[in-house]
Image (cartoon, rainbow over all chains, first blue to last red; front, side, top):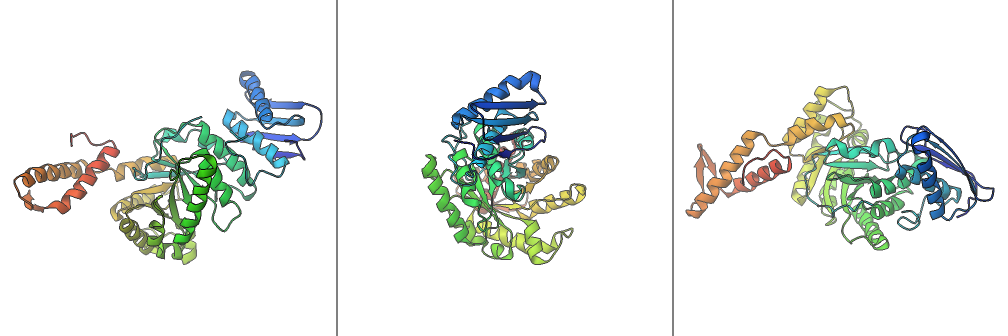
Length: 100
Length: 303
């Protein structure tokens, strides 16, 4: 998927993460802020990159502000932001396809 | 990936707690409370512009979190919104145990949802018939059509009254004792029992009024409800305690079942226990009490 426009998903509440994607650049430019950076920073980055790879997003800027989200929440927020940037988050989402 | 066992249409459902599917902080530990069912909400708890995000969050929660023995029901948006069809797709794809149809008013509403559930089961390769349904009755029309709603599908396991919307449509407010929705509760109970499905009462929203809550739970139990919708974990224990059979009820039920077996072998149909007449009509109810006691974990006998 291509990032068509800037889009955001998630909140800054505890156990959540706020993810913003914007078009541009070549490759993935990931900026991460996390309340658990020292313990989980590497794992969070790996999860975000894996989700983007699964969605076949090759070029984008992505900013993640993590408030201690579980992996499943992080995935949900990244996917929702990417689908929102394509205006395709509200119907016929490929559950169990690229979303898994 | 957590494979959930095939949902049981009839099981213990004393407590069903609402949780916003959009709030990860809530849904990640829902199984620790010992609830019978949780109700992940895509409807009123989720803001209009976050319906999509709530579905992504719901899908991964369903696929990742082990809810153990807690049943997982999802409340979908009403059929008058643009959201319900995608809600059904995500529920079925994620493997939710059941779907709660909000603002249900007719058998046709149930059939419409059932049709889309079946289509989603086919689309996602889910066993056909796996996804259960229940209906929330929130209007006078819904209550008056309760029986046709309860019998509209083999997937239906129960109905619940939703007090907030119902009271608004009747121009009444919460009255201690419940006279304002007594008729609706009673009609819905009659319909549910006639259709042989379960029946659940509405939420009690004033968390500061513990006495009022407890009085309502006792009344629910006396009226014959199977369980109650809840909004806070601290409401759970009292409901479980109130809906469990008492040691005296269990002992009486045991005596009836045992003596009935003995007497029927001797060719006797009606007899007395401690001065009370007993015949087969009592035995079905006695067996139900023992089954409920077992399900509640308070039965220690050997029947």
